[in-house]
Amino acid sequence: MEKIKIRDTEYEIIRIMPAAPNVLQIVFADNIPKEWGDITTFTIGGLEAGNISGYDTLYRTDGQTIYLSNDGSAYEPPADSELMDEPMLIKEE
Image (cartoon, rainbow, N blue to C red):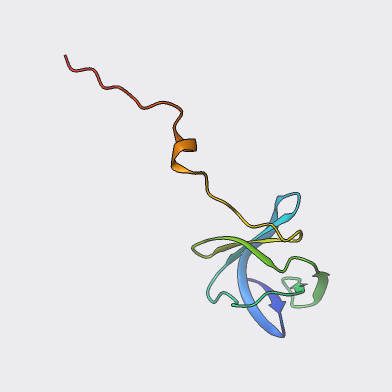
């Protein structure tokens, strides 16, 4: 299992990868942090691999998947009217 460290606490993750130009996706295996900050990544062998900074805004959550932005943006779901252009008409036969 991969590990990352945020604010001096290690977390097991399934994956970490870019989701969009300013958005990072992290899929946590168990616990999810309540606060964000610099992210330290580790190799599978446990050696420190690098540091990701600037992704400290919670963009969106989806279960164990967290999206962080580095530009202060947050996800805004589409309004109901944007989901469907026109109502569907059901023809009775």
